[in-house]
Length: 136
Image (cartoon, rainbow, N blue to C red; front, side, top):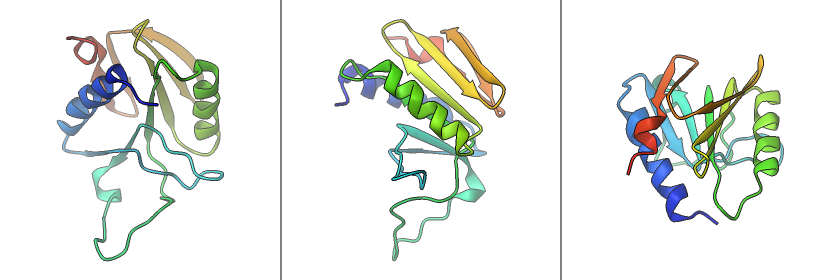
């Protein structure tokens, strides 16, 4: 169940991502991976997103270049990291798993895994300053 910290971090991430005119970040979009996986935020090149308000898509087939998961206090970090690996193995280039309590960001891509604490992270040409995300 999403919490205040979860919602706050997602909103702060969206604010930064929306500043980049090349990107279209979308919250809670179900991707056509397995039975359907819904990252907290999926980031696409803007030209890949063309909504049709007469017909909707329930499982989006195009994969994002970046998926972001924010861990809530009620979630198991191991399960979320497994979800991140599944997304990368399915073709998502990079997944960031954000753990607000430790202000940690797990980055998983086709090259491996890295752990960051705050600071600025760049993946696939997408930049987020996590010191701003975690500011209150």
